[in-house]
Image (tube, rainbow, N blue to C red; front, side, top):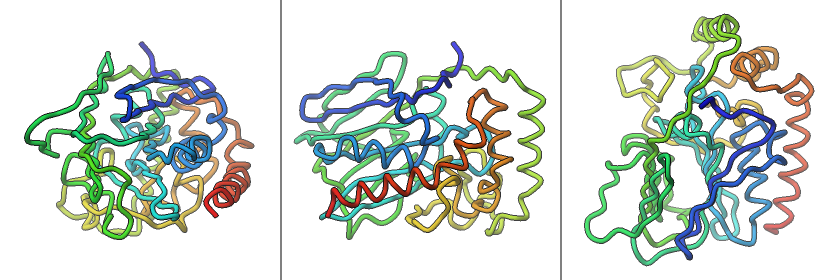
Length: 282
């Protein structure tokens, strides 16, 4: 099976109240590319459910420095953006999902297994965050335990349970333009000096050779350009992934049929969406 990159996005909906997991195709999301823009659209569409939205980028696991996942939710009337690294963004992309929407709550801890069959079940007894590719609780979100999505002390999640997500499902990526892909990959690696962080010996996010001092930390910087945050690049690689011709080449080399105007129109489209969402919150 090939990675499905047609003109739609695939979203996994998790309902904790009714213990249901449903996969949905969403054509309206395609123009938002991925990451934060997709998260905003999903939060807007399902606003009344007060969901937590987790999204990945279309290049996660395929190119360097686009290794973050986005978490978007509302806490005490505030819109909260968080970003975490590790492997979860790539695993979610390779599983064929662009985003996860979680609504409701549970009195018991929950495990979701994203394999060939997707299951949800309640858990009795000890719950170890290290057992999961993504762990969520009221005051912590971790990717493989080491990689954090940041500090949740002042903006806790609207859940009282632990949630563990395992991702073992994979789909093959057919590189129809392998030489183009190899060329763009090399170009990005050659621009490593543009990263605004120094290499270290810490565990690296998937697809990043830097192992920087901040790899374990989450990000909540909302002042980064829309395109890098839609892919989702590391904050330190913003200058690389603002380059529209580069992003266009990367997307097309792995089969995404975006055009230049899709990338150029994204900031305006996102700006309108952000205004509409903030109006709901107010």
